[in-house]
Length: 112
Picture 1 (tube, rainbow, N blue to C red):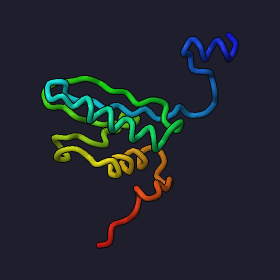
Picture 2: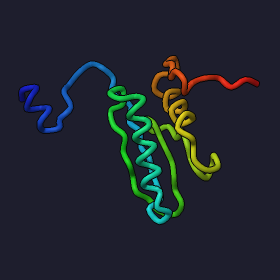
Picture 3: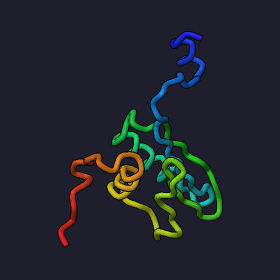
Picture 4: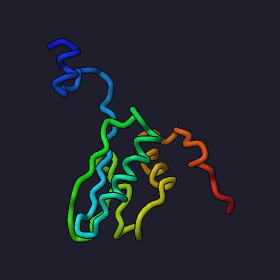
């Protein structure tokens, strides 16, 4: 299969590079958190762009709102109390995929 055919079929070309990170946002459809989940996905894609392999929205029920990166749970609404703001979410994902990455203004340290 040629590279062009591979791209068109959705197949991932064989490379020796490690796979790109995968983010999963599971949201409650009963609570109507789709827009919140979509906004968070957009924020991550705007910041990390092609450094992410995919951002997946997964519908759920029962008040669930979780975010995982490479199967590492980075945010759970019930565990962490509510929802992360965009800057916090970007930092959590960055800490999993590239801890040395500078997020610019989103990464400013607050003074103690």
